[in-house]
Image (tube, rainbow, N blue to C red):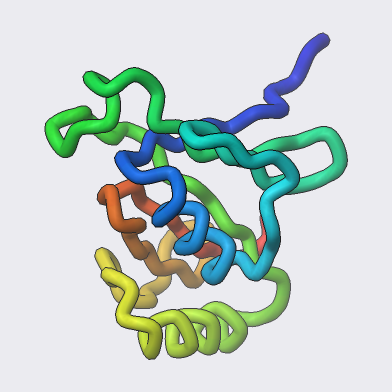
Length: 121
């Protein structure tokens, strides 16, 4: 059975978002074009930024998903990553707190897309 292997995030400015995610995730893209940029999340799995057509990349476009970053280690590892990211001026949507699945926090990219950090399941 096929499994998802491409995760798209709509952005308004591909170059600015590429810099944001490159710095945040400390990884370089594997493919770059003016409107589509892909990062390899795992072998054969891409996390991509896409401006889409102009009517897609507007602030009023609903955002109904989160990008997830599962961090190995204890709650202290999640708190340490939050502390590091907070020094960069990133928008923190939810400060670190405990949820049913463990320690978590949420930040937003420049377009308001959410990025949730949590422990490895």
